[in-house]
Length: 447
Figure (cartoon, rainbow, N blue to C red):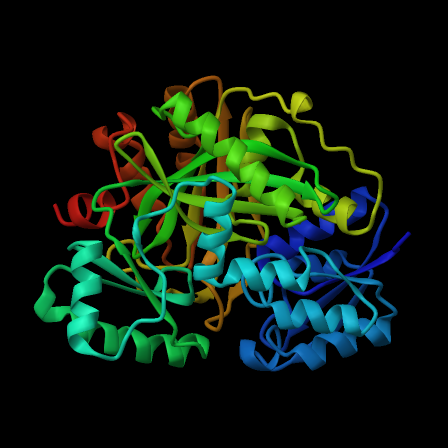
């Protein structure tokens, strides 16, 4: 059995992974950059290795440095978490080629699902509903291009095949904007992802964002942990997530859940993953599959009692996990607020010294975070500071518990979006579950 894990990440997910390793009696190696010397999990790891300067390109995205750290410490496996190299098929391939277990799906599956066109084709083959559109090679001829767009129908969305995280997308409302929008998106995709392949699909105007959490063993067995609703978003970035998604057509959901499991079985998916959908007028529309742990995974854990991070280790290290859908019992409702180091009104990042902070607590409250009083938030990375998660028997009670948790929590020294969450928890549209993915930006923040 593998005994030593190198955690190739930082912040709260690195701490989360370290805790799971301790429960499984696995030794840990924590990597860090010169800008991250004060991370909490470094004090708890068995070994630590500096892999480069503060710049992510020279540290957390530096594949040779990470592999060297694994080699010199005698690590057997590498855990990528989310972000950075978590969905980099080349990294997974190099891990394996260097003799390390990559804790995640196979490189070929990451590559397949990372290409949006291939992913949609595979989804359709398993019976997963997709957004109507055009996924062939876009012609250079302007007349042919306009005909394809008219067949798809306006408004339409231009998407980069290699895109993700809300990048590489542009909405086109009329034909006169088509060619210039395609050229712009193509250039952006090439610069951001090194791949300028695009596709067109119908723009679903006011949907909810619903996702399905799956776990699969790579041997043709898969289970799901139900749904999450991640509709409260700003610039395609999730702000609040909850589980399960409510007010969903039960027949459409059952069919989609089964199709998702069929997809995972057909590609011999290994580990945890999330299949994301737009949902409008009782219809699910496949967006993409994320082949990693999600930031919002705690809400699924809280309503099922299933530890997703430990499952990642058990599956990858062949530690005898059994996946049985009948054993997954759903109970109550869970909600997560992402606390970011940013101005609550302008959303400008706010790095700096946390002079004082206090975590929330109490029955049904979970706090996933790496911050502490005296911690210096660096300016080089994602602004996520903490995740406050509450669980209760009903959504209404869950919101009330979150209000209480937010009232207890405070951070001094830097700005956070804490007050935004407090306002949202008392917003009537949110409380009535009537919001969609456009609500936060177009209605709440615009008023």
